[in-house]
Image (tube, rainbow, N blue to C red):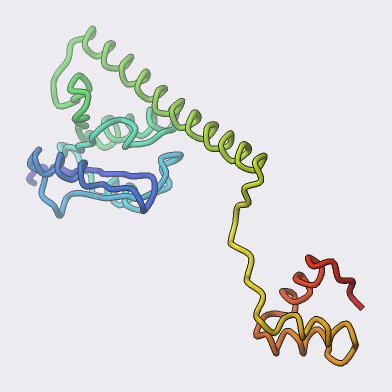
Amino acid sequence: MKNSMYGYVRVSTKDQNEARQLIDMQEFGIDEQNIFVEKQSGKDFNRPQYKRLLRKLKAGDTLVIKSIDRLGRNYDEIIEQWRIITKEKQAAIVLLDMPLLDTRQGRDLTGTLIADIVLQLLSYVAQTEREFIKRRQAEGIAAAKARGVRFGPRPKERPDEYEQCCIAWQNGTMTAREAARHLQVSHNTFLRWIRADGNIER
């Protein structure tokens, strides 16, 4: 059976662009149909496209990745997946940004030792970068909250007839549910508005 070459492309969110990685894969000679694209965090390997790719890999195949952090950002899991691919699956891995880790090339004991050290170092960096990004995000959110920035969906605007309905509710000529139906909002939304405006429920 002919050996195949696969590419794995990953970006962390749907808003990020994977074009550069795709170009690198095509320039390396990988067929478009053999490129697996994932738009998901690298915190773990519970990813649909990666699992699909892993099922396809067989002995003698080659997996091409742009860089170690595109494979993942969890140190222990990167090392484990590397072992599964190279030892259990007996497939080769090529990191475009780190030719030293090209497992297609035979190595002596010293070369293997150096490659293992580099793999562990890159995996460590990938995880620490993720932790740094998360910490910076948390610090940014905390600083924004301290400045009074509010997160989440914007509060729904009160309709023009809200004030009249509120007066009718206060006078007892309209129930809260009737007012909500009239304003075409939920009962809870109407009650939330009157609380926010300093009104006391009857």
